[in-house]
Length: 321
Image (cartoon, rainbow, N blue to C red; front, side):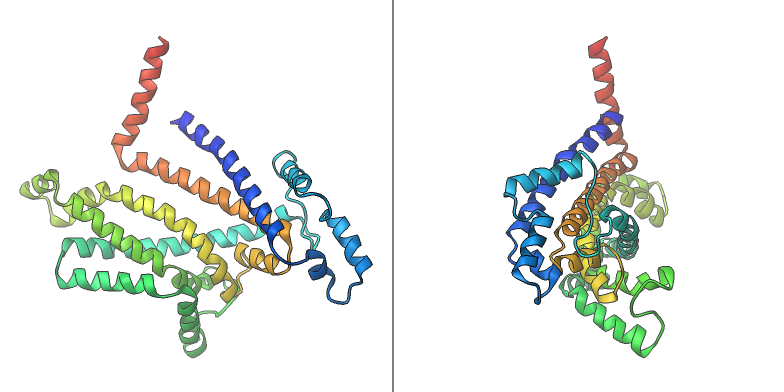
């Protein structure tokens, strides 16, 4: 298992390298003049030329790409913002936890509600409970998160004054509306995936045997069936994490949360390319680490996977002996 974790961590190097090259290329091909954006419309041609030279924009593409990759992967330096001149690593260290908190809270709400909803649908297949659960799931997939965010602000912040409309000054309470706005799609997918997995499991022979032995139905469903249906749900959670990270960019802008979303979008509007590139690399690494965690959770949930890793290790020991 340790060898597998090390191997996956090493695979993150080419992933980060590929993301860095792709984002750098896209930023280079993006229309617009960063020097013009930074200096404003009143800048003279001489000032613009000097700014382009300062930023290295006059160098050939491959020269700039080589310098950037050297700084990032050899010197571990993402550089400084072109707009604020603040170190990007320092800013990400402050903003990244806020985005992660928003994403994790959203994930907890989505799967905390989606799993029971999917279990209810599976245990009442083709009944009114199943129909209601699937209709709610379809509505959740169809609702745009930015539209729902505006409705929630109007109701809970403007009319009822229960929750703050923006910012993070009130701590975790400030994340409730953003998380609710961003969780609908993940909640719907979780409910549908849970229903599908549970329908496969509850027809298994060992579930029938447990019921014939008089095991309470609640224990049969939640202790036996749900545990064995968790692998597809965990996979869905990993994919949802990446989707929620992307959705957090829009939600953070609407609720004025100073996280990675507002940082990257604001920098993109200002043609602050180093920030966009560095932020994207960090988000890609965060997603890669989570997918590694998902694979490790497989072994914790399903003993067969853990035994498979142990079996490979024993074979290598015997071969070396």
